[in-house]
Structures are given as C-alpha cells and as structure tokens.
Length: 192
Length: 125
View 1 (cartoon, each protein chain N blue to C red):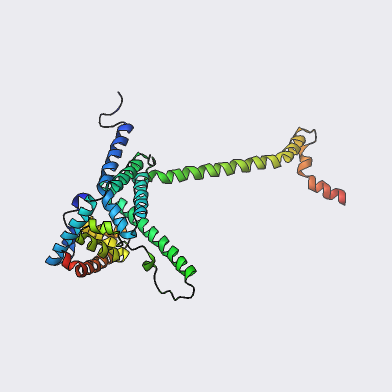
View 2: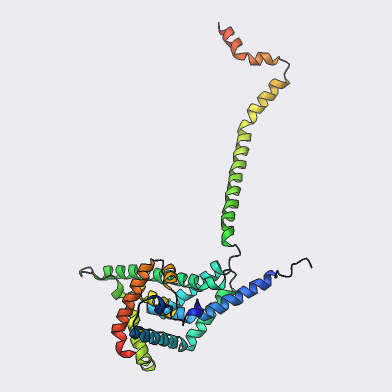
C-alpha cells in the first residue's frame, strides 16, 4: 500500500539477479572451461578453476550490472589460472629437486606440466585434425600469450579490457597477441 | 561484452593481414565447435556447478557499505576498551574516594587540611 510503484520487493529483485547470473554463466561456462583446459591441460583442474570463478563472482559481485559481469568473471578466472600455474611451478620445481639431485636443472618448470596435447587413441580418432592441431598449437603457447589470444580473438575483449583482465599494460597485451598470432600463423598455416 | 564476441574486435585494433583474418575466423570457428562438441558429462558437471554457485546466497553488503562495517567494528572496540578502563579505574580509585568522604564528613575545619603541609613543617621545627 505504501510502496512506490517503481519499487520491487526484495525477493523479486533477488530472483531477477539470480536469473541474470544464471544466464550470464550459462553463456560463458563452456568457453571458460575450454580456456582453463588449454591453460592447465587437465580437466579436473579446469573444473575446479571454473567453479571457483563462478562462486567468487556470485559471492562478491552478484549484484553488479550485466555489462560488468564479463570483465569481472574473466578477471577472476585469469587470477585462478595464474594461481594454479604458480602452485604447479613450485610443486614441479620441488619434485624435480627432490628426485634429481645430480642433474642440472635449468628448466623453468613448464616442461613438467602435463602435456595438453597428449590424447588417448579414441580421442585422436574422434577429434578432427584441425582441432587437434589448434589445441596443440594453443597449448604450446606461453600461458600469457595463450590467454591474451583467447580473450582477444575468441572472447572479443578489446585491448583495454584484456589489459584490465590480465592485470598488465595495454602494450603487453598487444605484444602477447601479436606473438601468439605469429606463432599460430606458422603452425596452423596448412590447417586453415 | 559477450554479445560482441563475433564482431571481431581483435581485427579492428590490430594490424592484421587478410590471411590473419581468415586464420582468426577459422580459429574462432574451431573453438566454438569444440564447445558445442563437449560431452554430456562435462556439460552436466558445468551445469551443476552453475546451479550451485547461483543458488548460493551472495554477500548482502554492497562494496560501499564495507567501510561502515569496519567503522562499526572500530567503534565497538574503542567502547569496549573505554568501559574496561573506567571499570578498572573505578576499582583502584575506591579507597581514595572513601578517604575524601571521611574528611568531608568530619567535624574538623577544611582549612586544616588545606594547610596540612605547613602544620607538618611547623611541628618538625
């Protein structure tokens, strides 16, 4: 009776926000998962990363406008991927240090990460040649080049948005993107 | 932003050749295809994760309210310390207050107490 006609009950607003979040996450979850798989080379790790990103988005930024959700979500996703990469590097360094005391280790830990291009024979048969080549080429890119490329070329973020998501300078985004594109051009030339 | 995904923003701001344009279009197409080809188990798991995340109650405090939360906590802390300090002070100050009451209630003139140090010096001489 005393409520302004323009105001909506809290429950209705909350339900609308839930629908908005659900719609947004439904739109990005597959691409986010693929990005995480390409970064980690491990499906379970990718699920964990995407789940963390979803929970954090809803918990911290659940009341944000629709236009703000994508940059926030991908920023969280990149942060989680970066955390995973750092933990993996430390773990692999420790492992290599413990198991090969007599060997000189000048690697940066990247060679210890699982090979995302390693597939079972069934997967190789099921997947198309072009997709395998693309996955392999993307997986071999340095992590930041790979993620910048995916955000720019696939997700459609511009340089400024990508820089904000990756928390780096716009110049770095251009450099990473250019190098990634050059590498893919060399490796995928015959597949496209 | 998601709506702009296929407007090729990468091509607008970066100097790319026609060959790169073809390459990028093919890459996007293959990546989109890889999403469409995800197996049922993966899709089901992603769906469950999304439902769990959305149904979880998010923080009711807006970002602009967070400093007020801190302020309230700080005020409560200051009040607690202040009350504790006063209680302790009241406990230690009780005997002195009782002495003052005895003097005020006594029959002696207050001037005697005011010049107490003088009379003490006089008595020593």
